[in-house]
Image (tube, rainbow, N blue to C red; front, side):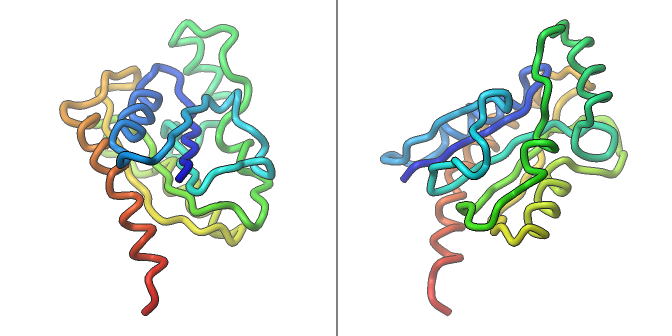
Length: 170
């Protein structure tokens, strides 16, 4: 089984979660981690499961302005120019099942979730979303909150069992 994990990360936290998810996948599963800048067009995704990770910016998915600001804060002047928002804008039918996660600040009680925004957009495009998760970061820049990498590995382990349950006849 092939899992493609595409992540948008400005401070490295969303990338660390992607790595932990891949580490948690069961033996025999091949995972490929790809930064959003290197992600293939959605029409060309060749995987059995697609995992998408994005940071939460201003109540949802990053926008060009919030992305530029985050990149400047992270010292990434030549960082990614597109985000998950643009990548999924033309989600075609026939994508493999998708799992979505985000990172967001632990201290803030603000509503909003990049994962929820991605899932909503994909479901509107008739894409099957099998799971969503949120992982906590201290402040804007991180680090990840204690235990979040272990939780991400466990979430990765559980993804395939969720797919098997969803595919079981009822």
